[in-house]
Image 1 (cartoon, one colour):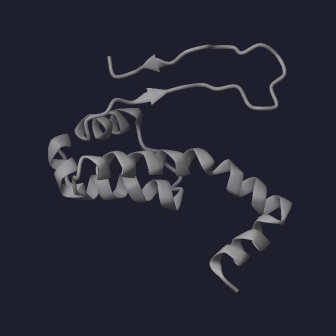
Image 2 (tube, rainbow, N blue to C red; image 1 turned 30 degrees about the vertical axis):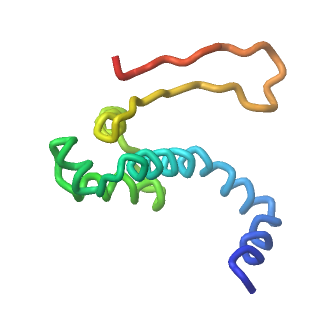
Image 3 (cartoon, one colour; image 1 turned 90 degrees about the vertical axis):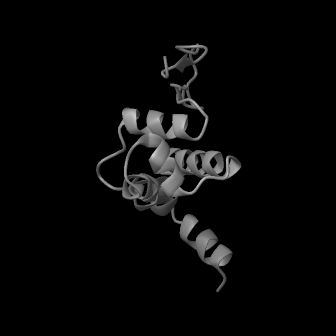
Length: 113
């Protein structure tokens, strides 16, 4: 069985699919971190130096999103990482797709100010 076949089989089970879907925000954040670091061509050690921290902190941050650790990274740490790779942190609250009423908030807030 290939990886894709195994994934399709697992995701055919409603409980597995629900859990997988609940992890999408973490996967999206991890992709954004890795893409941003890759685009500027920095290693974890170089990002750590720009953040004035140890390389292990950057490695733990990136791996915590893969391992779904109980403690989420702080907004301060995410902001520092973003700045180290030439970005800023942009957090949005977005209505769920099943939300039928008017949107509660339009726009975004830049928390790097």
